Length: 314
Length: 110
Image 1 (spheres, rainbow over the protein chains, first blue to last red):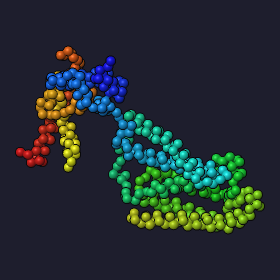
Image 2: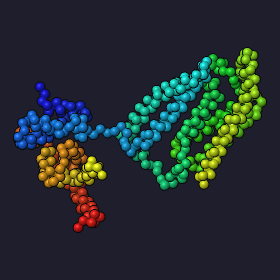
Image 3: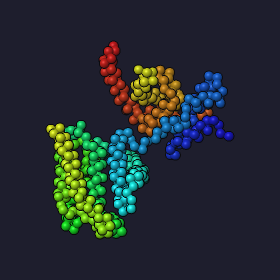
Image 4: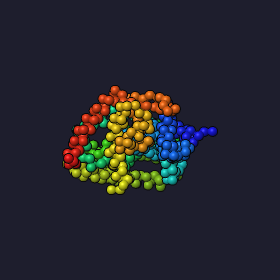
């Protein structure tokens, strides 16, 4: 039958690394017996002395931790970078999940907002769990190899201190830009990712005379997308980044205004829709230009707000 | 300031000196309990949960040499200050004296 001390040591052993356990337990036992001897010299029985020593040492896990401290998966000094990587990864995964759901809805029969929310959330949780695992393991192994320690403060210099640290770049604005430009690209290039049946089910298409707008919008959307991704790496505005952001708004605003002025930009690609539901065609022809013009005005107004912000950076 | 906050600060203040105390006390071979008793008798109270893991860490850093021996019918691990430990202790003593001088001046202790 195991003694009380052996049972206690067995409990400590559970939390010790295999390569050190025999050495630590051997020393721990020797020390505890010496401590117990000191109690017996004061008149305690051996069993009671052992019990007193064990109670003094406390929880077996705490003892194991004091002898062989477990290294954290992510070191405290790496936490800011770890949180930043997780945050940006989560933003990208959210955008990916939203676009995945939106593209699935484009080819489905119904546009259910609840489905949009729940499917996006489900996709996000699926991928976020993997992100957490991959990022944490990467930090653990990179930290253990010493690579993170070399990298941590490497790129710091006085010149790189932000000039306007209070002019924070809004993450939600960047997120909105990433989603909207990615979705626009998906709409422009359905031929690259949608099945033939799905494409045939689409009601609207660019008119043959406006095909060049596919290229123009692709170029400015890709530029805007790349710039939005770059902004994810920046904490605050600099003059040139804010000027670029304003230019981004102006280009989109002008493009949308131009498209609003075109007589036949988008057509109804399914003749049966035009025949069976002529009011759709009429409404579309009457209001689509207004929709584009209003969008252009909104984007222009947002650009104007950025110009006011630029004046504050003087 | 609460007692627990004051105790934490006191522990922080003592933490650095414990290493020096252990190194200085292992110029002659000591096993765990004998070292704790030696320190306690010198007025440096330290509980077993702090001292024994600390001694192992110092041995892992090669500041202490260790050897298992049988004495009084029981095996014990004896620690002795290593050559590297002697050098480190000398440096720590110099630093301690310098720090002590500065602190005495700062605290206006004659």
